[in-house]
Image (cartoon, rainbow, N blue to C red; front, side, top):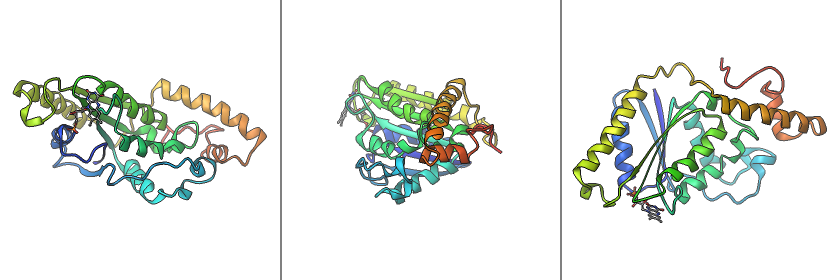
Length: 240
Ligand SMILES: Cc1cc2nc3c(=O)[nH]c(=O)nc-3n(C[C@H](O)[C@H](O)[C@H](O)COP(=O)(O)O)c2cc1C
C-alpha cells in the first residue's frame, strides 16, 4: 500500500514523534512518501485565481502543487499532521491547502479523492487541537474524502516529548497504535464508502454547475463536470 504524509511542521518535535508512532505499524508494509512543510510545499497563494478560472498549471507554484497532488492521488491512505498554532493549523499547512482550493467540490474535485481514507493527527499544549484538525478536515471533506479519522491530543504539562510524564506518553502511544492497527485491517483495494454528506454536497454543486452551464457552457468548472459525466449520470464515487 501507499501512504502520503503531509506534515504541517518540519520540526522534529511532538507532532513528528506522534506521526512516527502511527507510521511505525506500516513501515514494513507500506511505501511512505512524506512532505515536510514549509520546506517541501508551495509558496503562498497570491490570489491570481488562474487555477479557478483557467487551469491549475498556470499557478506560479504549479510544479510543487502537482507533485504533492500526484502523491495524494496515488496514496491509499493520507496522513496529515499539525501542532496547534493559535488554535489553528500551521501557516505552512494552510498555505498548502489554499493551493487546493480549485479541488474543492464546488470547483473541480479529483474523482480519486472520493474513495480515499485519511487520518489527521494534531496536538497542542492546552487547547486548539480539535480546531486545528477541523481546519484540515474541512479541506479534505470538500475534496470529496468521506473517511476521515482524527486524533487530537493535549499535552497539558510540557511541550517536549522526553519531558512529558511517562503515563501521558504511553496513553498517546496506545491510542495511535490502536488506530494504526485498526487502519491496517482495511482492504485498501476497495475504495472507501462515500457518505451521505459528501453526496449531498455533490448534488447541490451539480445543480449549481448545471445552471451555470446553461448560461455559459465554456465555464471552466462546468466543462470539467460535463467532461466527467457528472452533469449526466456518472458519479465520482462509482470508480471503475
Ligand atoms: C506560534 C505558536 C502558537 C501556538 N498556539 C497554541 C495554541 O493555540 N494552543 C495550544 O494549546 N498550544 C499552542 N502552541 C503550543 C504548541 O501547539 C505545542 O507546543 C506543540 O506541542 C508544538 O508541537 P511541535 O513540538 O510538533 O512543534 C503554540 C505554539 C506556537 C509556536
